[in-house]
Image (tube, rainbow, N blue to C red):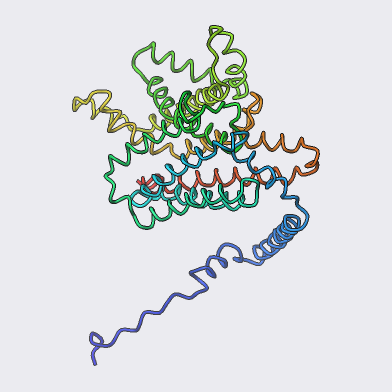
Length: 403
């Protein structure tokens, strides 16, 4: 038998000590005696800390402070008889999220997955609290509807333009449901009663949705060829970035009413949303400006040579590349914005951390600081982790850092 006709040796799998979990452990944690010693020591410390935390959480922690006040943590003093409006708003968002997740990319799927998981977790906590099985069942229905729409890919039966318009219409519909309208069955609910996770989520959502386009316009204005536009944009950005958010919130709460006619009163929640939006927009503008400066000048010159207008050049060439490159920076900024919503406590608004402080002021819950702050920290961790994971999926889909 000649060498050309000899049977080839069968392919053997790579040694498990080189690839796979064992290979990763050997390469990263046990690559040398010193590395192995450090890994074992840190592992022992982490195991001890985890054991003590688990023992405290299971046998010593007074979690009744959360379940007994779960309604306050969730919706503040929002009337319980009108809480169905919140459920209906969540139902609309959950349905649209499930439809979008079935056909869209990883970013929407990540957000939809965490939205469903979060509502299922809240359903369990609501069942143990005074909210009872009705609210718990409503939240669980939202999670089930979202998952069914996602797994059955029901979004393929809905035209993309119709789904887009549904998302746009859901914003005013949710606003009307939350605030109510006078003279209708939807009685107005004062924003002074909004609080807890509801207020935290609304402040962050409105701040992100409004500050991003405003910041993009400011970044373009700072690079404008019109001196007046460039000067005003630069002055605004530098002024806002020179003061802390607390100062902006104080100005929105105390100084703004002094410049308004006596019959005009802006709601405190609206003032807080405006202050957060104006503050965050300046930082978005600087992030976007960095992305704009990274665009090679040759592309801009080529677009001008082809006769493209400034709008079309920015719309089709400059902004898509600039915004893609600053996704990590902007997501980090929006995560900071979410955490900065706790500063509205100085305006008398009780977001979720403010609710925690108010609960701890009750005499029966003295000494339960660890339980309250652990719960609030867990909520913020879930929200921030969801945003970061959605950002990673968006970066993968757009090829950030790869092309």
